[in-house]
Image 1 (cartoon, one colour):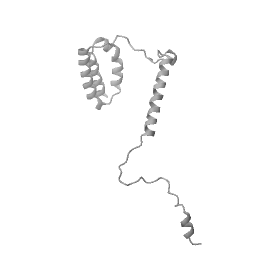
Image 2 (spheres, helix red, strand yellow):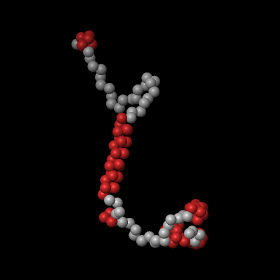
Image 3 (cartoon, rainbow, N blue to C red):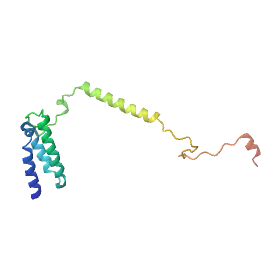
Length: 139
């Protein structure tokens, strides 16, 4: 447990190297995720954080200093999505599903012409008797 506390303390110090706006907005969430990490994951966390700090300073960040609310989820009625956008998404999803279904139905796999046939799943019926075979059959 002392090792985990020590790793978390070093991670807190490392988070201080982020730009202030980024740190103010994301540090609590990052600390929460790091606290739940296993000791074997810490080398990856430190490596990723080191690269991300450099990238934030070089490329800049559009993060504002707004803190997230504890419950930042929106109810469906409060969603900024309009009904038309939801309908467009539904139509697009249905078009993709119908298209994939059609392609999988119509596109039969090709087999090489080697004279082999697939084993039938249902047993073949007995051969039909013709008129000539019926006359020659003993009674």
